[in-house]
Length: 235
Ligand SMILES: CC(C)(COP(=O)(O)OP(=O)(O)OC[C@H]1O[C@@H](n2cnc3c(N)ncnc32)[C@H](O)[C@@H]1OP(=O)(O)O)[C@@H](O)C(=O)NCCC(=O)NCCS
Image (cartoon, rainbow, N blue to C red; front, side, top):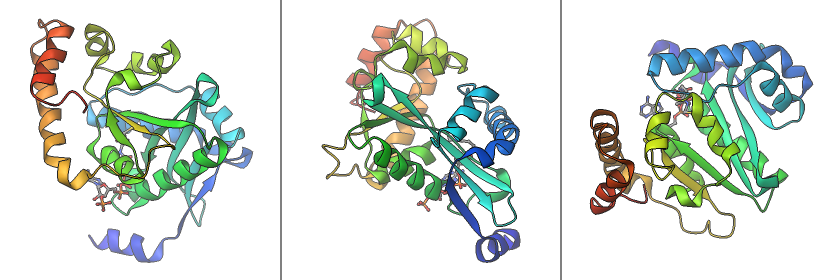
């Protein structure tokens, strides 16, 4: 607790749009992402050193650093269908700097940067993380069915290294443990109210885990039907 207060009041953390001067942080970024995924027992879309380097060089990422240059957090932009769709991906906050509101700031920065680069793009997200669900819906994303997400193989390729990939293939990409979210610049006026729906979202996550991970024999289509009967097809 003392550490958190100390960090909150005395440590200055700034978030920068990336450039070549940030290439030295690549190894640490990848290591932090991988260690956190292992600790959570979830899958991740694996990124290579070259891929992250490219994002940093092309200024398609944001990086959080302390005033002493210590790495604190990261996220980058993925581009699909020639900029029709974007994903703000790879969100990571180093364990030393969590619960200080940094993910919220990083998400805000990468979101604004994405809109500046591609003002007409739809921004999508697929996540199992309730924290990310909250942060994204606060920014104006809304839960959607998977059919509203990009349909290119390239978009779904990122899921291949996820531990739950078989669920996605079983349901023929109609549904997975992740919730699909979409920010449409044309329809962002009415926000999805996360606080009103958080219990429903947590319950749905548990139901999906129970169905998809324990009842493996149920065929994909039957699962989709079952969840729509439960009234949760959209999330
Ligand atoms: C998830 C993660 C990015 C959160 O980073 P963070 O800097 O600690 O988050 P913040 O402090 O900005 O908190 C954002 C919100 O989530 C809430 N939150 C943060 N951690 C939480 C947790 N473990 N459980 C529940 N809520 C949490 C905060 O209370 C805050 O809500 P508020 O806006 O109502 O105050 C960080 O824990 C992380 O890097 N985890 C590993 C990687 C990961 O899970 N990435 C996301 C999926 S790709």
